[in-house]
Length: 371
Ligand code: PLP
Image 1 (cartoon, rainbow, N blue to C red):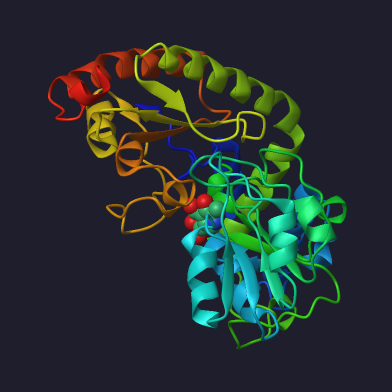
Image 2 (spheres, rainbow, N blue to C red):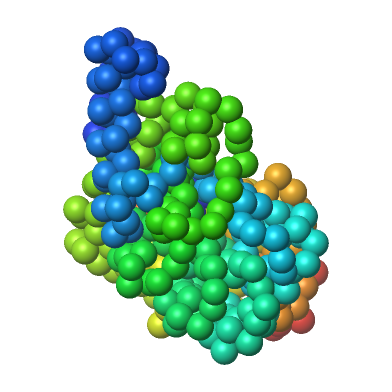
């Protein structure tokens, strides 16, 4: 299987699984317990916290462990002080839904390449209690100018679930107050994530109880997943420069090969895209059919957001970018990671070149585009 759906989830690296193993086995003590086993678990959690902090230039004391990106986003949006929120219309549902629940949200639209205007956000944020703009989009991969936006806004959260571990992020340089990360997007296990909260930020907990995580997220820590998350952050940070250079070369080669297929185009802003993200439209093809056919040909890809159970719904991101129904329908997202190879790229390009014409041969739209 050629796995090109790394924006949806990633394989747990074998090195990560090895570091987790003691904590799914003999090291089962509660990190809040004062006995030796408990103290070992606590040390493991705190070591992981330092790794997560290092990935984004935070202090370890500013990292709150959560169950994943969704919980981190919810904590940021729902835990912020009352008042209007400014966000964008291309956020993940993990931000959009809690914004809707707050009731008084403004949604700034992107341009046709998926970029959100700095001035648009700053102007809309006037009088807002919170601004939330994603660091990079999970469908088209556009990297937003978060630093410039945060400089002109008040309390600022960024959903960096797709960006973390792929592009350098430094919370001090970005000037953000809160930042969400998820473990399973960077070759760590599911069930762990983090919210960076700058010291002194006015945000409250979602989950009340025993007071773990400095009272910000009660509940016994998911030690094994947190240990794996820490290992994944360390590996991502140490290898970022070389890994992401290679990922970008693979992505560019896949793009070059896929563009040879008539009626194909790349979406998003070519100058500001995540290294491993290739989002394309193949006119006259149904993306859902394309994903099924590619799967039959040994390639796992996506039409866009797999993180919503309602995958039949048209992409709100592409709608916000002004895509027509047919352009949305013909869309395919291929996302690469450092664990992919150039052979994967070759296999996927060959599969696309076979499958797209096959689907067009039976598509009612293909004639319209002269394909
Ligand atoms: N935010 C973005 C941008 C995402 O891509 C995702 C997952 O796809 C999430 C949040 C949710 O993260 P998790 O799956 O860790 O809950």
